Length: 349
Image 1 (cartoon, rainbow, N blue to C red):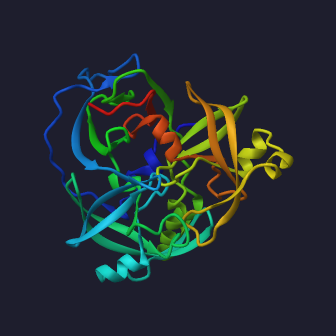
Image 2: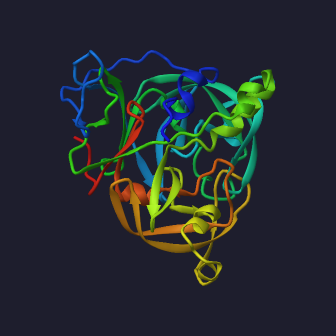
């Protein structure tokens, strides 16, 4: 089911986000419309996209990084669509001499367990984009594993309200503000294009039912699990998959392995490894290859996954990480609640 609250409700998370005014030149071309109907309601103007920013994307050790400053000091951030909110390391907080918001604390949950976090308000300037003032989280996340190289993670809520062109072939992230009739999937990419609806997690009742500081803590606890979700079919079985640019590998959790019939004997015969995430602990895992997986109308052959001995409270069965984003050029369309995929991938115009 596709919920129309857009990424856990962009309108509903304004308690944490302060969107600064942005201006940019409009692109001269109209986006490719991948649906038959590009008009909506009584307004017959075609969908247009205003380009807000173009941020250089650096890849290292199968992670994607963008650069910028916080309060004038240089930072490097992991671009992580699997982490709803932006999270700084405690070392970065100390280096930048930031002060936490009083009484705003909570926990985030990811691969490897829970991490305590606090809330900070900072001013960002990202290379290739305008400046933002944002509430962010900070905690001692994942420093034993794959997140030890950057100052923090930047999640998609930072760019709330925009369409995100994750242009890995062109080594950049393009941000677009949709105008007019963009409820149909539209993208500045050329075919062949494939489209699949994005499913969003429900906002837990604990958030709306909890008063004051308890509500803030409950809200924070959901942020790490709010990656854009699509349905993936393996052997006729449907899995809920998160699109996670912060994960170097595709991940299959215990729930997903059970759904598609991977036996304990197959897991025991697979090559062992370790999986790292935002939690403090490395998780036991094995390497495995799914022969065929359908992401909407797009079939992916020989999809490597890491089967992790863990389930997340978010209900995700799997994660499509950097491996997937190298195979497929992805446009995350918040304007139409869909994932638009270009295969084979080429740079955006």
